[in-house]
Amino acid sequence: MIGRYTGGSAFPLPKGRDVANGEKNGMTLRDYFAGDAMTGLIFGFPRLSEEEVAKHSYRYADAMLKEREK
Image (cartoon, rainbow, N blue to C red; front, side):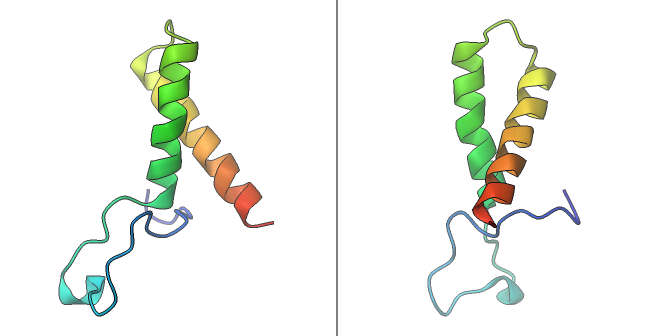
């Protein structure tokens, strides 16, 4: 989401390559954390809808990023 803290790139580009040259950094750390949370939610709470899983996954990711900044 634009304007939201993402934690930066989960898998940064090698030295000498950057986004300014038109290359993409790919998945953010927020996305990576949300993906991990999603796995647990799907297996732990199989009755959640896809929308609920997505919403809660990013809530966990945002909490991880907040805690990481302490």
